[in-house]
Image (cartoon, helix red, strand yellow):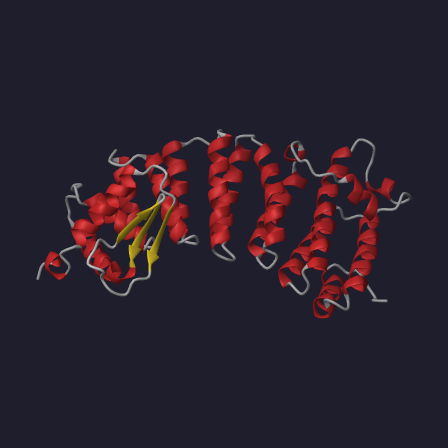
Length: 354
């Protein structure tokens, strides 16, 4: 029996979906609309630049497009038919985790049948439905790296970073989205564009304060922080004030031990790390018993001693962590005990709670 006989409306549905994708350059979202039975009307819903498909027909449509696409893929002589692009569009909107279908779209780009800019728009719509899908992020990076080959435009990269943050907000612990953002940060640094890392440092500070249980963003900030303390050029556009953190961490007698007069950069770099340490403390005070915050704090303590392995840093860190642990011992008792034990065993910092 032909697939058209199983579900005769399939071709009309995928054509309607493709027409919407082609005609609306501002299309922003796709989702499934819960509707267990047919309502004797088109299951494709299109409202305010948002596309939806009623759930009752999803299985039938996907079976139709999947079998036809696999049949096309198996042909020895792969000629692009008029149906290939609409079939791929519907298949990837419903299930974007099939790498073979993304590879078929790659071939269509290389053959000139699909435009890279249109594909970035389409994959962003798919990402709104599956914000953690690794295949989508990989496809977008492939377009930038192999087709567009341009990492010098701040507008383009900022748009990609915004898409990554939107995807991260759509799915908790979305490491794929944060890895995608960091890939673009690395490419911008290779182009000696240092302003974007400062932009991300400031922007994700707000994001972290709103998602305190999500360690994936804090891990992203850890990567950014390593870049900031490793290269003075990365600090040029940073707007945060670090002098107050330095004054708070060191007393006036100890601060001069940190550096020689010619090493102002190290003063500025450690100030950024300390600013993050105090920001972390503020979050722990406001949001009690979040393991992600304590894990991030351990990273910061380790970074300080790993980069600045001098006695005045170790002594000041010991005094600071004793203060914090004593202050938070009642509200975060379990996490404080773990933190103190880690300081003793990993960093050899002896702390006794008062």
